[in-house]
Length: 363
Image 1 (spheres, one colour):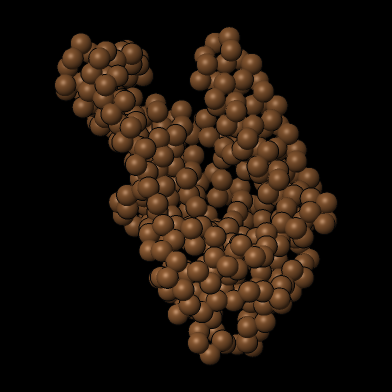
Image 2 (cartoon, helix red, strand yellow; image 1 turned 180 degrees about the horizontal axis):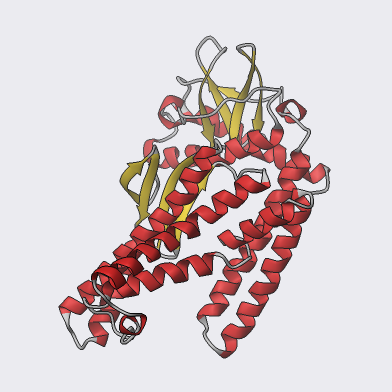
């Protein structure tokens, strides 16, 4: 389940959600078209329908990435639709340049295919010429609805191919560079280009269209985040879970009152805990600081830990690559994981310890 989002379907095992803020966009678009038409309800509904059709295309765009990634054993847990676009939660991007190139191009390719199909329909079935399709695009109407959708798909493809993270074009550019240099260096080059373009968007935005300022900020932050992520992944290469394994850790039991977790939280540095079965051999849950605080407000200090703990968690192996372990923790939104060797619990790994390991390495 995605917090704050509505589940709308599943395609090839990939869950699709629509965030509640999307409703704000629909209402806003309805009011804009309703107001511009002088109070025409039909025009307002047409504007809302166009946004729904456009976001259906955005969903197909994200599915393009996800299904291409699946060919290279890159799993996508879900796709979430936000007012600013769709986000495919992929476990990682392929590291082989050709594979990353294909995954990055798959999304824009879907929009080009949709636009091309609409072009064929409008020209071959409806008999429209290019001048006929562009005659009056200033106002949305039932007559030019498909033409508007066609051009919107072509614009989406072009916009996403801007060679800057987090756009698809940034990944395309990195993949091309990676064919002739190491991936970390290619990422730095691609991120630097993205930051330069972002500054250009912000500069132009102050003179032409203020929306460019927001686009520039979005691109700059995305380029910076991608550069940091690649630096982090590169720094962890060659290390395994065993290198950050914590063999000294605090444990809790399901039948204990939540007060026991509060005591550990206040008396030490640990913020996440594992919960063992009564025999003290197997992990049956994990408990985080946020879980403790939330459940204190709901059930009080005497409630059993079994009611507050998370029963869904991941386990790691000591010889597992450390970058893979970190990606698993991030993808599953869990800050701590037990580590098993030959069926025996030998320790835990948490995100804070990985971050400290990176700090020691100077990242």
